[in-house]
Each structure stands twice: as structure tokens, then as C-alpha cells.
Length: 320
Image (cartoon, helix red, strand yellow):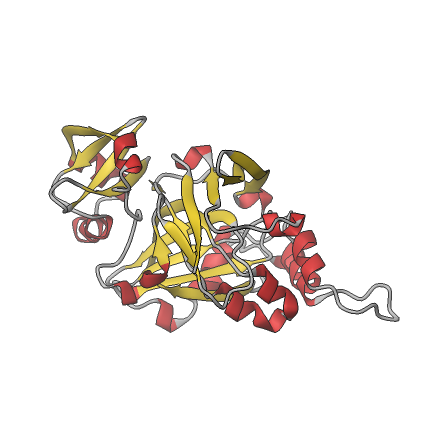
């Protein structure tokens, strides 16, 4: 089951259930945040509540996408109460490209590992939360607040001091903290975590700077169970030309850390469990065009698709 938020002709918002090429409007709620709060007060599961609120009115989906009326699938009414964060080195295919970026000068010890490979190895050996026991903590980073995220169809702006503006195709988990201070996972969306890989390559201690960039997620929010094995496709288009394309794997079956472990280590901090706050957490990627030597340019279009999560996430790069 997938839902979207969109802006209607009256310049107000609606929440709708995705039904192929049509959207079925939900009654009584105007945004996803309101829907989640209603789930808290009613005691109904989110899926049951969506089925209960689904009315008879439907609208065509594609025109809303074409007109850039589709919004982020979950936001906080106060953008400063939305935390945007992420974890890295979490996927079985992600370590090799990151290790290339962080190679140190050759050591007399041929078995010396970079910090990236050490972190990745720790996740491989003990990155799963099992039977309520957490595994090792992952790499973690902060990306911004609700001012830093954009919906599908909108530009990803790279600041003038940036050295690079590369895509990172991945899953994003979307959460609201309930009235008792417990994280409630609303669902999952396609994410483009969008980072400055050249800056990160200078020195791994620049990772924090490299992650303070815009990002995008959506257009849809999967509120039913996430499959363990997902195959996505990440593409970069320059005009009518396909510049780069690669398949990527995600979901618990393809990760060195399981999602439950990543959630535990994020929400173990009291400041991330403030009632009412929204969290957008990127779970890490396994591929990136930068690792293949691609140099993106102003106007390039990023397209990321995971069929089980609905329509693709599409954003154009704007370099200022």
C-alpha cells in the first residue's frame, strides 16, 4: 500500500492512496502528518486507517507529476522539526567504491585496512539486530532539516562552494515520534541522498561537510511491509542522452546492517525521540556514478526507480 501528498487546484493539500495511474483521495485529513496523528489517537493501524478514510473521489496521477504538484510524502508543518540524517557503509556492494575514495598511502603492512573497510567489516561481522540485541553501530551523518529536502520534479541545488554534486540512490525511512516519545515508522520512500564526493575524497574527516547538501525522497510512501530484496535502477540523463545507468540492490537481504539495527542506533539518542518530530533517515547506497568517473553538470537529470515503491524519483541538478 502506497500513499502520496499533492497540492490541488485550490492550493491546499490532499493525501491519496495510489491505485495504478489514479489516486483515491482520503477523507478527513489534508496531509500525511495529520494522518499519522489520527492513527495515534484512533488506535487504528495506518493501513486500516487509510482503507477506512479512502473515499470515492479519484484523480489522475501523471498530470500532478507533470505539473510538479506532488509533494514530499511526509513533512512536518514546522520544517525545523524535521531531522534529515543517514547511515553509510551499510550495503554489501558499497564498500569497494568507498574504499577507493579513502585509500591511504601504501603501508608496510599489506593487510592494512582503510577506516572505511574497517567499518564495513564490523558491519559484516555484527551489523544485525537479533532477538532485541543490537549489533555494532554504523557510520552516521546529519544532512539538514526540512528546509534541505525537495520533492520529485524539483531541482537539487548544489551550492557555489561545492566540488561535486553526485547522486546516491537508496531507501529512506520516514518516521514520526509518537506522544509517548517512541519512534513510529510511517514507511519507506525512494531517496536520493545527494552528496559532495570530491570533498569527501580530500579527507574522510570532511564527510560531515560533504553530506550537508540538499536531498530528495518520494514521490510515494510505502506503508505496507518492505520486501527484503529490492532491485532498483539509477540513471543520469543529459538532455536526451543517457549518461550513466546502473542497477542497485537494497533491502535487508542486501545489507550488512539490518534496518532494525540502523533504527536502533539512530533513535537511542533522547534528542531524536521528541514527540511530534519527523525523521527522514537514508539507509545507504551500494552504487554511485562518481565511483565510475562520471562528472555531472548543471541540468543533468537524476532518475531513481524501485518498482515496489511506485513512481520514480526524478530531480534535475542546479549548480549555482
